[in-house]
Figure 1 (cartoon, rainbow, N blue to C red):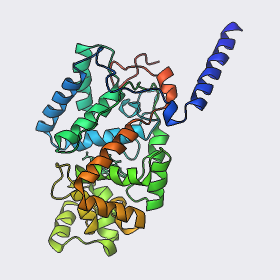
Figure 2 (figure 1 turned 135 degrees about the vertical axis):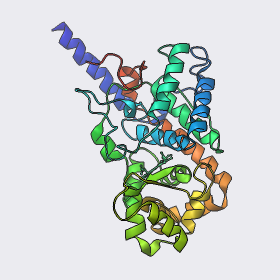
Figure 3 (figure 1 turned 180 degrees about the horizontal axis):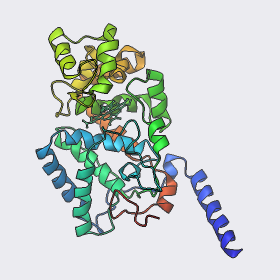
Figure 4 (figure 1 turned 90 degrees about the vertical axis):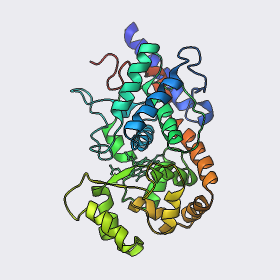
Length: 330
Ligand code: HEM
């Protein structure tokens, strides 16, 4: 009896905590200097590992940046994306947006191993993603922003939310806007964050609907289009890739927006920012002319996205020893 009373009490406390913590100003506080005493070498370790990873594979910057987006849109930024499937947990790695697509898990493992040997049990996997994504952009020639830290890792993941919350490349503009709004992100945040597509690649299965079925708003020159079509024939080679921002896919510049103005967006969801809505069109035009304006907003919006945290995770979460698994699996 006493035990069930205390469970009820705990639930009540958690529920009221959750209800009262829905506003950004009430969220548990993340701090830039969170690891200053407990793991002073966290930043240099992560920067160094990112540097080594990019020397081996420059595309890894893009892959790590994308991990942050896919993590934060599902249950908040809690490293739920990193959990492997187990008999009792269906993870997010096999959801539509991630399967055969999300990369960089090995780099996170390397970083985690280094951090665990320096300061065991201190730096959360969710914070590792956040710092690695920032460093990925910086090392690709992009802006620097200060990250706030102290996130906890979840003990759960959501395959369904990964399928429902991460927009698809063939969603229309309103659907894209709504999916960002649901995370507390504005249309400006969305257009700036999509500038992340200035680095990295997309697979043929995602490119095909744009290059074969949407030729009306297609402005690729004949030689350019032939190259993309050669890489991505009408069928087969689903996992072949082409740069999202041709021809500077490892440089964090503003050419993504310049391409959109020219009708050269690689995904339907990219080009639609320019072709479908007047507000988003204006923002695209402004970033095409003002690279520093893009960097400033991108940095602000990355901070906003990385601060999507579920307050409950601060109570129920942990610092995983291994980012792929919860500390005490059933
Ligand atoms: C409207 C929302 C978005 C849609 C529909 C979308 C869609 C996609 C798709 C389809 C790919 C290619 C995946 C593949 O073919 O394997 C991709 C790649 C990528 N996305 Fe997005 N994305 C969105 C927002 C974002 C945001 C907010 C960021 C980061 C701030 C981001 C960063 C990236 C990066 C860097 C890549 C390249 C990854 C790599 O090369 O490994 N995306 N995105």
